[in-house]
Length: 294
Image (cartoon, rainbow, N blue to C red; front, side, top):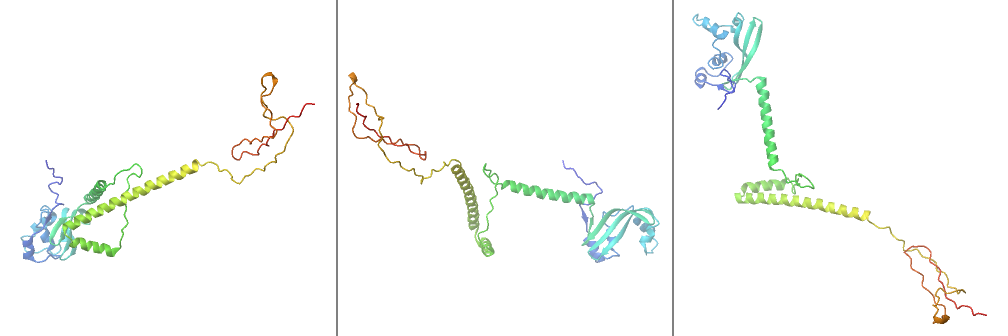
């Protein structure tokens, strides 16, 4: 069910024009503009202007100064307050309280032979706000339909592609697109989409490469072992023959007789290998023959 939001006496959404009257009386002037206004539906037949016209209708004398005559009445009246013939005229509907005090009620204007009712401030502001909200909602819907895909690494990233050529190439491309057939336009669109996808893929690959490189550098710095100086040397000690018991003692055999005679020549032993950079080396021990009993 359609609901009319305008009251029956509200003509703010309508206008009035009478071509036959304009052709019969000629272009509008400051003298006949109000006469043209009285033929419209905006004019109130119960106003003081109509009462004054009815009083002087049969006298045969025209009204010389209607504004001064209206000061003798109180109530609703109309007055032409601004005139720019032949295109613009402004008429006020007002309530006269006293000969010197009036209260505006509505404003009408004649623009290019068309009579309009001027909207009030509430209607004007509400209409502008509604238009702004509609445009904003439409823009958000378009952005939502072209929103890029979400990735956990970068989120919603809009691909921004720098133009590869200057204004001359852009103009040439525009001219080619105008002269080319529809198939060529389709190929250009598909090529532009492919270029956008390639740039987006390249951007994602660069981000992934940077992340991998940063991870490798962090791992190398965190798990690097301390370096061992290679130039550290230990002075060698000269080998000297000392008298004493050999570290290698032959095991006694049965009957107290040794099964192996001790070696006559000293047997050098290799020093045990320590960890790299472990400090000083131990002196080498030498085996000597035991002294003969007296």
